[in-house]
Amino acid sequence: MGYQDYSWLKDVEKSFDYDNFIKGLEWFSNSTCPGCRNATEGWCDVKKCEKIQQNTIDNCLVCDDFAVCPHTDYQRKRYSYLFDHIKFIEKEGFDKFLEEEEKKAESGVRIQDIREY
Image (cartoon, rainbow, N blue to C red):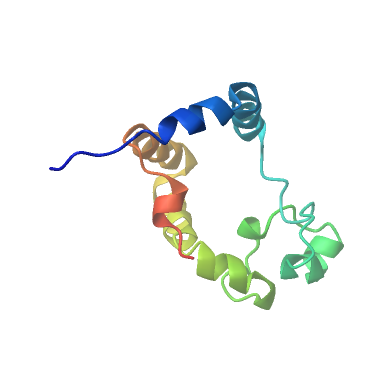
């Protein structure tokens, strides 16, 4: 392999704001999903759902109509693995699901690696 010029890293190191980086990591680690009803994105069709508007459900994933609801097209396409998760939970239980997800996290699997763009 040939010589790699990494001299540009010195400029990056000078401009890198470590304190803001740490604040950002803390923000991500403390963030939680607001649930479909509390989502603030104006483009999200979920807010148009009667069940969400009437506070009948907190999250689309617990709705019996999730798989066919026209308001969840985006979620079903972008997060297609959710159906596998739901089937696993129905078969094995939520505790087993969390155990498996923890194993995946420990091995380095990230949601960015499996979701569709």
